[in-house]
Image (cartoon, rainbow, N blue to C red; front, side, top):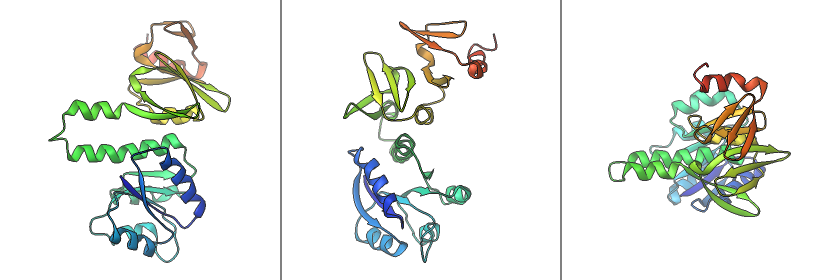
Length: 235
């Protein structure tokens, strides 16, 4: 998938390029620092995805977007939250508020893939699409690990790092636990403590203020107790 960055701030280009470098299916088509440079890139080559800033000189990102007859997929990257509604009215894929984490960035990029799958769903078995949505890459130990969501037991905040406990291994990641809370589906994962997220289908037993997952004990935070009660059906 070929992408283009449109932003008048060079540091924004470096951050997005760094995130994209972690995803081997993304290939840069070009960098634009204003709408006119963006139009030149778009007309010269096929671009599938644009990371678009809003506030730029001479023409805003949304003004430029409205000039396109068949725009590529758009992920807005901005420091201003007040334009979100207008963005979704323009059929953008996602709206990222600066500064955003890699996990939040990855969630937005995955939405682009989800949209593409919807268009080809008639020719692709549904179970294939479902399977791809349950995998993501996680950087740890200077490697990129492909993680299947079904293998996650629980996640633990660990200082400036996060421990991801899987069925057969544990990976230490630089991502914050809040980033995982955004990334993982709420239907299968629950924040039960300021430092812990658990896979609800991996819970073996709940006793008092602790959760048993395999041989591990996970504490239940007092402020998160209501979530456990809801999981238990109010009992």
